[in-house]
Length: 121
Image (cartoon, rainbow, N blue to C red; front, side, top):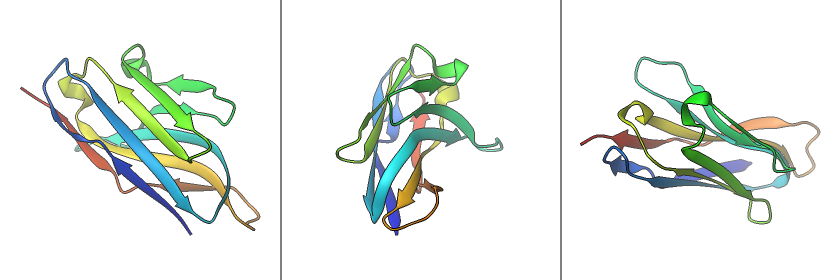
């Protein structure tokens, strides 16, 4: 079993900053890509940022220059530093990893439970 626990969401004023963290635990053999997605009410879940095991990053155009994704492969954690937040960033943010469990044969996508980010004055 692989579990993801997210933390760091909350309420922030426009222009403010938040840092999200996600820790993976359980019978993890290895992790490939780690990332953050978000879903606003009435919208589909969308990619925010991803980072590969080699450190290559990818961002949604809407967050480029404002958000920074990072990972600590030794601790199986991924973080998202969000700056200059806008009301349209309001959403539930989900952590996702592509991992192979210890003794497992294939790569599986695991999702966290989500953390609410609200940007409002």
